[in-house]
Each structure stands twice: as structure tokens, then as C-alpha cells.
Length: 192
Ligand SMILES: [Zn+2]
Image (cartoon, rainbow, N blue to C red):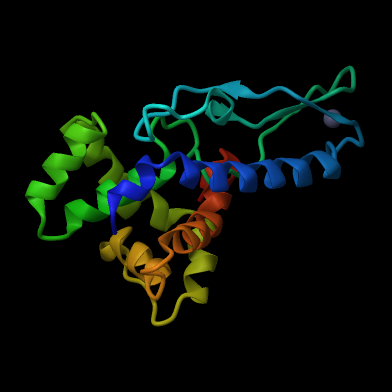
């Protein structure tokens, strides 16, 4: 569980290309009304990544239906952004997980490095331990992880499970975890 990976542009290049695929799939599916989707991305100022994160990586892909009278917005799942949270999803997982371990000094270090205040970290823990376990997603998805993951161990145990065996290439473990969690990155996916 090394934070340095999250500070590397190459890591975000991999995640960006997956987000682009998720967006392309959503675009091809079109709007539920039968209309076509046009790009209407959200500009974001993501925090917690490398300082030189390329500008094009800072957009959350999103679409709008082109039909008059519908104009519905469709925001595909993402492996970079968690809803409207400003910090990158991987940072939110890592820091919340670190806080569960017996490493207060390390958390302090990461909070400083990623410029996160204490209250924000507390909110993330509430998210993982109270809001996330109540999502419809988790109620189904937890069944795919055996042995069962206890809600009290979230998100540390998720990180452990997905990174296990990927010591030489943690990027692929992160890809697995962020992909697994991608359904909860939309407003719809966070519903209980
Ligand atoms: Zn439509």
C-alpha cells in the first residue's frame, strides 16, 4: 500500500484510459429515450494526485441527450472520481484505509502530502463504514468476496484483498479495486 504510486502520472494515464472506455460504452448505449448522447464533461480540480496531472485527466466524462424535451444527463461510472468528491477515489480509499491501521504517523504524513484536513478524513470513514455498506451495490457485491468482508474493516480489507499478490504491479490491483467499485461513483449507484 504505497502512496507513491498515486503520485505518478503513469498510474493516472492507465486509469484515464479505462474511464475513456467506460464513457465510450455509455455513449454507444445512448439515452434511454432513444436519443443520442453528446459530450458534456464536468471540469474538475481533482486533489491528491500528482501536481503535474495533465489537464485532460481533470474532466469527469459526462453526456447530455440531444433530444429536445429530454436532454437527460448521463454520467458513466468512473475509476478516478467518486461522485462529486474533490479528492481522487484512490486517495480516499488509501487514506481511509491507513487510518484503520496502526499507523497514525503515516496518516499525518499522507494528510499533509495530499493536503487533507482531519474532518475530511473523518467524513471518509463515515462514508466507508456507514453509507457504503447500505448501498444496493455493496449488498450484492459483498457476496462475490469470500470470505465475507466485515463492514467494520472497510475500506482497508478491500484494499488488502485486491492488492494481494500484486506486489510487483500494484497498478493492476488498483485497477481491479477501482473497477469493482466503479458502480458507486454515480449518484444512482450510491442509492440504498
Ligand atoms: Zn434522452
